[in-house]
Length: 314
Image (cartoon, rainbow, N blue to C red; front, side, top):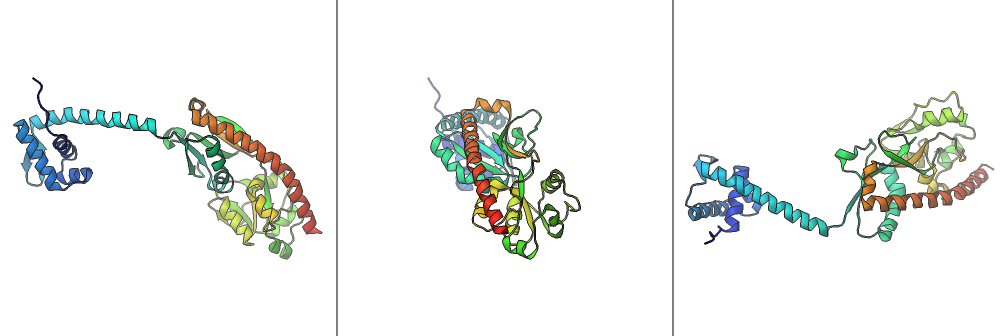
């Protein structure tokens, strides 16, 4: 004859109380009152005919029977939780976590990510913004988008956007302080992104001497430098793709729009094993195609903006 089991409520109350060694904490977890937990534990003891806890002043201690029973129940509840998690996980959308800088997220990725979600529905895309390097194992990141030379040990790196930086300035500041030659930068405040050395790279690539690349205020990310340039506080060095709208609208000017070849670009970076996940494969295909489309659009746009810049100088 099968032994009847105690009520699930009393078993949960005992397991939570034993795990926390506290009726109050168990009650908080179970969203009931401490009195209800105490009552359920006592009912369990009466049903089993054993004492599960030694009740000392301000302390609960498992008896030998209670300790043995708790060890078995704890495994049973863990198995139930894991089975429930596995079942519900199948119903949830797969998660894709993309790491990129705050500026790239705000200026490039976020305005376009809706197109990916329409093209590949059913994926929960999460964008993690940070300026530091990504640890794919500890950060829970699937893919990262980083600006640099594209060399990352042990990782796959695919070039997305050839996007050498260009100096940008507010028209009013340029009218006040001419900026017709790169050497004129010596008379302007240089606006910096704290995590990059782009001004030094740009000045070296352009062969400019007599300009201190470390001079000027430093911002947490490129968004701050762009906003400061729009406010007329100095000259920012940014990617064309991040300020194309501001240049077209005349909020900023790029005196040297043709740029210089620093070798820097945006890259899609990921561990080789990431391609075992279908969401990563789908995102990789989409962003590479999107980057190529945008590059094709921006190349003629750069020519148009260059004409606008030349016109503004005349």
